Image (spheres, rainbow, N blue to C red):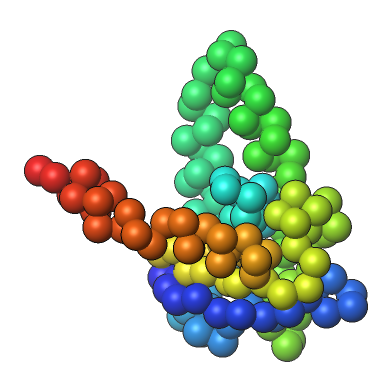
Length: 145
C-alpha cells in the first residue's frame, strides 16, 4: 500500500506532512487513523489502524513470561500514539518519538508496503549507505528456495 521515499521537514509545531501518494493510498483503503511508535534501527514505524491491530494481536500472542517479550512489548506499545492527519495531511509527532529517532528537522518518509517508516534524514542516509551494497546478497539469502 505504501511505496517510495520522500524527504520532508518537521514544522515548528512538530508536524510532518505525509506524502501525497501515501494520503491517496490511505484514502483509497479508507484509512483515517494511524499508529506511530518506536521502530527498529532508530526509525519510527507508522501503521494503518487495521495493520496496527494485526501487529498487536501477534505481539499479544507471545508469552509475557519471557523477559525479552515483556521488554519489547513495553518499549513498543508505550511509545505508540494514534494520529489522524489534518486537512493539510500533517501529523503531529510527539517529542519523545522524535528524540528516539533523533529527528531534528529533515526526515525521510519511506513506504515499506504495510507500514511507513519515518527516519531522521541523516540516519536514513547512513542506513542506506551501509546497506545498499549488501542488497543483492540479502536478496539471495531471503529468496533462496
